Length: 263
Ligand code: KIV
Image (cartoon, rainbow, N blue to C red; front, side, top):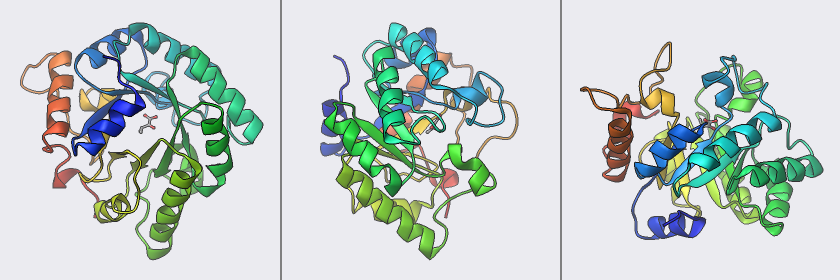
């Protein structure tokens, strides 16, 4: 049975966990969806993972639409979430057009990075039949503003800002909230205040779902491994076995553990 937003809400209401992994092509979409991952994220991380760029900033809507269409052809029933890339939603009109391009390419939901300034667009998208996931915390498209990939929400002002942004995004109609690299106690506090399904990456174990970049959890990303990543391709398992182990670990609560959290 195909996974829909209703499925995700049902999993949350039953107090169970759901899984999300980035995927950028048909072959991996087939493997990941058959391994039981509920949400495939066609992330703009493809700019770094596939294209070898330094950040996600250069990625275009056309590239996102191309990879979304590839994923859609291989997908076996997962919910496909596609990233609106950098500056493709700087105005409402641009955001609607970019989101429509990704939906036409095969996305079921779009993801966009930011806080309260996004709310009018999130509402317009929802009114127009396009569900949106709002990505908060460390938003990689703002790496130049942050001065690096840094944990967010470490001081009182930014903690409060994240709480306010979360409530505003939910009130605007965000279907899913996603938090990247924030302290786990802040994540737990936000979890008590919001009702939408929440996905975390480097945000601790309190969220309803987890996401990782596929190449990170397969241990094939060059360079230093981020604190919040676990390599699941260990002990001679196949790629499918590693993805299944990830699904199992998220669902039984053994991933993420305290070693993957920020305090
Ligand atoms: O593009 C991406 O892969 C993402 C995840 C890091 C959440 O946005």
